[in-house]
Length: 323
Image (cartoon, rainbow, N blue to C red; front, side):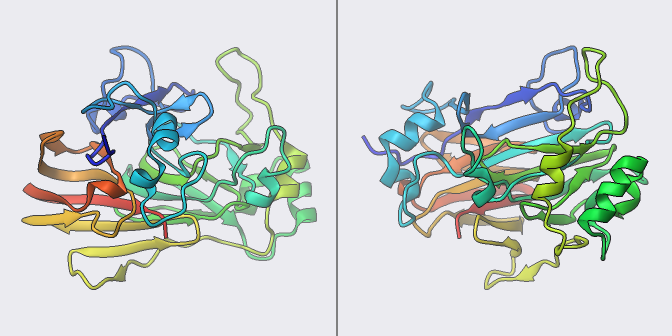
């Protein structure tokens, strides 16, 4: 039996110290009644971190198992990879995250065990007044400058800082120093990697009362000092007036859809990750015959073909796929 229907996965949660409760209160995720939750991993195939199918004939299988069992059905015209190449998550930043950097593919290949690089993009769902992002070094900052800033505890002074608004998109290539600030609710699409080098962590301690581990030398070695500041993406028009292109890179494409009637998505023989950000849509597919509201995420395998969607109310969604 082919893998030809849209997949809903069970979200998995991360209770990092900077989390809050908005994954449940705003994005309708089934977080436990108590505790803080920083991330909801919606689509993931990375080692032991696995999305589990919640609907249809393949319910109970992991995304990794689907990649092995249905490579052509899943990837279509794109060359199948050993693991699913993208990871999609929601983040609730109730405190500032650490200033960190991720390796690129070449650097990740030298790790033990090897990992992909991590190029990512953030879509700002909500921003409290004054909320900040730290995205790239200020122009002209060198490795020597940053090393001195680490010693002087002035790393923040070397960072480019923005106050984003809801609807902004920031593209963070691998090797770029960055951090989300408190007060942000974010959707993130990234390569399926979880390798992070922490450069600066605000002098705080972890849940065990001890300072969290820093990776100073790895960070200084990994950062690309030629990149400089990151600015919000300028949406680009497409041939469809309801679709804007937010990011195109060699790892993924990120589109924003805004519509109020009927649309079909996924007619190009490749997989699509879809996340509903505002409004509500209805799918009438036999294995996904339901209304999908804010926070809903689903994966359309290539073999599914175009999936008709009807906007029950004006809808904004993200569409993510391989270039």
